[in-house]
Image (tube, rainbow, N blue to C red; front, top):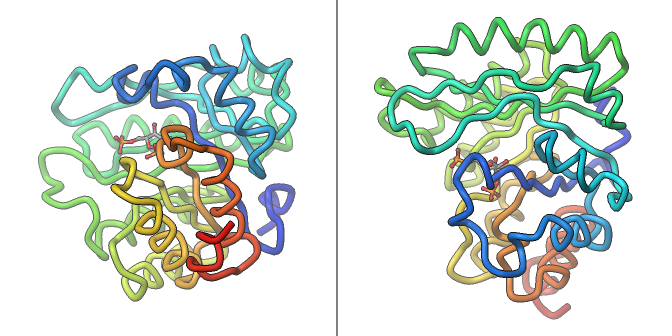
Length: 257
Ligand code: FBP
């Protein structure tokens, strides 16, 4: 696990993601979680190993953040609908100045623009490693030629891409069942795999079941946003998620917390 060790507890890990304001737009937010301070507080108190955000949030709220910062270096909005591209807007040097412990980057494999992102990431990965930072790669198959981004083949392609491009961890979507996700984890070789949380589940049991399946398939943990900070009781959800992912408890035990 190497550079990711500092983000692990019992070999597992939870990252709180809060970059949806640009990736999706503020439609993801309500009156509470639109305030970054509310989500930073969840990161501090909820048992998370890193907080993932864009540089503007880090600049303005870093003083309040008490856990390691995973700074995303590229971004895009959700407005343009075709083959996506997200380009670098923040340097590794600036991530170091902001106190980041890790940097994050998203590549949309299958997009007409994947070559730009792959080459940009190659440089970032070398700069970040030279500066002693861990590198987490969000890999999402997307674009005209991607019919279904959550098949076993597509998601395994994503986790393998992260390994082959030199990332220290891969963040991918869930395939929907344990067996196929085990192949995704195996395809990533030595690097830990984080499952993305996705849209908030109808009920928390469903979300925790997915988390439990992913971990039993070998995932290191989750890099999750909406299912936590859109919860009616985010700290309770975080406590339950810790029980399942870090402490290895069953979903029914976690739900009793
Ligand atoms: P969620 O748990 O809210 O899905 O967040 C995980 C995440 O990877 C975010 O870091 C990112 O903003 C978002 O999902 C990207 O989602 P999309 O699949 O819509 O591009």
